[in-house]
Length: 616
Image 1 (cartoon, rainbow, N blue to C red):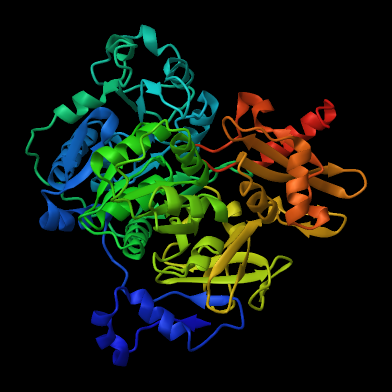
Image 2: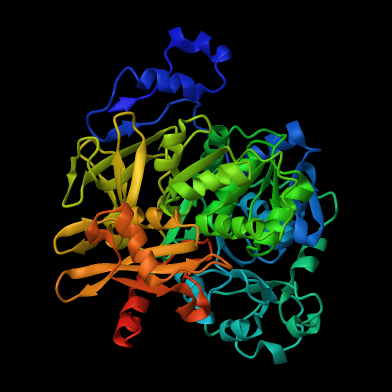
């Protein structure tokens, strides 16, 4: 195993080299790996601090710098504004009974209120639980009951990508039955037989007048809670430890029921810091962040990375809107743009069809693409059309805070388009045999990726059995998180994700990797979206099915899809079935709110279409 440490004799080279990564590469090049196990740099040292404790340090350095821009609310907060506002809100929450260890559940879009809430909860030593606003009433009740949450912060309407606002009246009626007829309760809290632990519902009326405030009079108003404290509130003196849990993130649920990952201040603070370091963020950077704050992408890769570097974060809209994302880049003269592949594709489609002017992107240089494997052709288009020449690729999972592997802006172009980079500081990674997790594979062989280090969650909340399934100590006592992702590592420590182990298609005993076929199809000019899965087949066990979304104004036949793959790949990789994404329920690929494609749902859709005879 290679542990990267910068020797004293090489320290003087730092001032001649743009990033410490060049030193790391120099050291690594002298010892090439033979086994798929590696450790990241031991510098810089870990920050032993709380998220809000580090915020105070940033305020002392960059207090007058812009911290948060909520474009759709026309709201701007400096770091000093953010610090004061979060202290005000913390005092208001404390008056409602929020205390150390309380679970404060939030169902909100990307707003200034949500940004302030993060640090208000942290300052109280409480635990923020961001939920996907798309949750149904039953999902919301299940989450609240699982966590025994006492406090819920929710908006009057939920905004979801490409959909009109959805009223939360029915959802709240499921959580607190018959609340509408109760009237104002004098701030005495709520009672719910559906969620016995619930004591407060704090509501943000974002309905722009579509729903009257009187409708929600039984609940507390976020505005009133905030205003209940003076504009110059005293500091809170609560003993919060860096290793305390501060955030519970429900996993995305791309292949199974979500689990509640319990993350600490050390997890989130350091992960954000190391991400920003690797990107080269400074206090001069402006980061447009369409990914949601309720997800690790928005709150750690986005918010924490920006705060730890004094950068500005911009929320274009409550939920992803590609037009507003590009317009925010233009208006704020942004230097970075974040997204998952489906988000970037939507932005590129707008430019392609001239629905957004091709100007105002000259300051863009970097960003993060994450959430799923990035097709090579998509990376090239982002470099070419949005000037994202320093775009970085991140890989990780909610349980690892989330980023464990990441590229550098100055990595060779082939590494930035074919791998997810190398491990982060204070992190280890290994590739093991999927049938024997104690066996580390030679470099170049595919197996299951496992990671270790400071970034591992404490556990799944109230679920020791699932925790024990994926978090396992080795013979040296090191605790590893087994990711369920198939990967391979090269001799320099670069890691390539080849797919979910469960997504692997086994056709007549041959392993087929969907990403290979997806990359080939993305190169076709008439293909805007594609996802490949395996569906049952009587002869081979499984066969290849491709779900295709044609580019606007372009046509492609199913035979042309097959012929394109046949000319680029081996014959057994040609899709037996081609389905149109437009024929799916809702006319779109099933995705999590963070943009990940839920392939298990596509498999079910494929089975349904086959049963109904919707094949050529």
